[in-house]
Image (cartoon, rainbow, N blue to C red):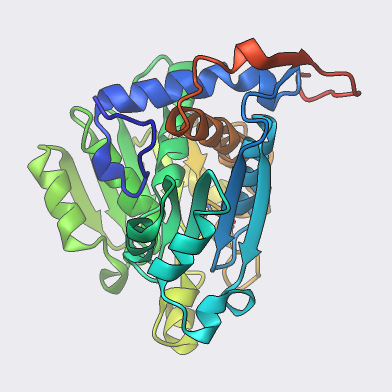
Length: 337
Ligand code: CP
C-alpha cells in the first residue's frame, strides 16, 4: 500500500484502491472538525506554504482551511508576479527556499510537470494543486469521494458505475485525473462527450481501454443515457492558443433542467469541478439546476476540505493523533444543522 508519511502527492497514478480507501476513511473521520462540532490542534506549530501561481478559489482556500482546521498556520504566495519566479528564479531554487519556511507545500502552476519539477527541490512534501492541463489529483480524490457518497445514497458502489463526462475533456485536468482513478475500479462505463478538437487525450483513452472498461465517445448528448453521474466541465479558455478559438466552443454544452430531464435519469448525480462559467454565452450549468437535489457541486466543495484534511494528516503522519488533540468549540456554529 502507498506510504503517505513524508511523501509528495503529485499524481493519481501513485494510488491503489487500498490507499484511496485509507484516504476516504481518514476524510470521513474529519467531519466533526469540518462541521465545527469539535476542533483539533494536532498540527499546532506546523506551517503550510500555499503557492498558487494560477487563479483559484476552491483549491487554494480549502487547502488553507483544511490546514487551519488541523491547527496549523498558512503562508500564501499567489500569482507569478508576486514571486521571485518573475525575476527568473528557477522552480528548484524556489522550492529549496520555501521548503525551509514550511512543513508542507501545496502548489498550483500553469505548466504541466511543473509541480513535480518543484518537488525535486523541496525538502518537505509537496501536494499538486493542479499543473497546467496535466493533473489535479486532490480534485480527483474529492470527486471520487463525492461519487462514492452520492452512489451509496442510491444503494450503488463505484464498481459498475456509468459516468458521462461532458465538455472540454482535452484541457480539463480534473477529468484526466478522475478517469485515471476510475481505472482502478471494475466495469466502469465511460461516455465521453466533446467536440473532436476537445476530446480526451489518447493516453487516458488507452488507460480506460486497458482497464477493460466500456467506452463510448460522441460529440453530442443523445437519447436517455442511463448515466449514474453527469460530470460537466468548463471550457478551459486559459489553455487555448487564442481566445477566439475558445469562443468557438463556448456554450456548446449547456446543461439546464430541461436538457437534464431529456437526457438523464431522475436520479443522475450532477457534478462539476467548478468554477462554472455563469456568463450568458457559456452558462454550462444553469442556475435552474440549483434546486435539483441531484446537483452535488457544493457537496463536492465541502468534501474537498475533508479530503485535503485527510491528505495533510496522512502526509504529516498524524492521522491517529487528531482526536487526542481535540478541544470543544466555544463559538456559535450551526454548520452541523
Ligand atoms: N476545482 C478547482 O480547482 O477550482 P479552483 O480553480 O477555484 O481552485
